Length: 290
Image 1 (cartoon, rainbow, N blue to C red):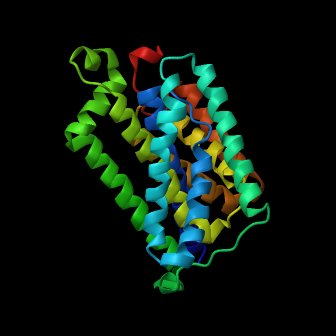
Image 2 (tube, rainbow, N blue to C red; image 1 turned 90 degrees about the vertical axis):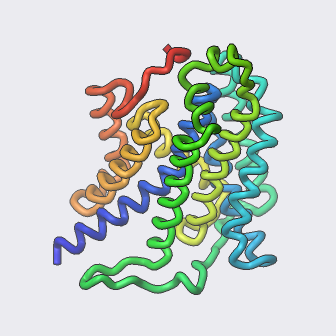
């Protein structure tokens, strides 16, 4: 029976890790290509959660698709208005900009919707449990794992198997060379911002019935997402995936064996990784950041 409890904590940890993963992939992409440390990233996670509540009353279950798509559209506007002027500026300036944007998003949500948490129910057709022998797991959480896996797989195919992905990868490693070939990175920067922020919106949309919806939820998820990026390594797609799952499993097992250290476990893991590999587990050398 103890083995079942341990397995449940591992699976719960993987679930938490997948949530971090969707946020961290967008953070890593935007920073790798544009050099922007987006402290407002968590705000779009919160926007996705609020949008699904608003849209659900009008269009029903399609709101779970429409909300992250709307966040991606908002991301296009944010990239063009706020981020684009800072790609070649001092990184400290973009840091201050996105910090201010994060505060604006949080306070705007608080003014519009109030500070109190908003409840949101799990879709009725996904309520209940899945039984596999003695192992019991939430049907809705299992559905989130499937959707998140599909989203990450789709992003990998886009980056590795399409002309768009080849230019993005080249732009990360050698943007000057891409420019010398007559290719403008501006539309790719916009698309990457939309993808990254859309993934954050997707995570917020799916987690809304589980975590509850409140204005500060974006700030709460942002630090663990940054921890995942640091552990995985800048510029590494697989590094972020491995780091997110590792952080989730370590956190899940820590909850089982020593609950008081659950939150600290990810920071201890980050410290241990950086002591051995300062670039992170799979960090790549990116010339313009050297």
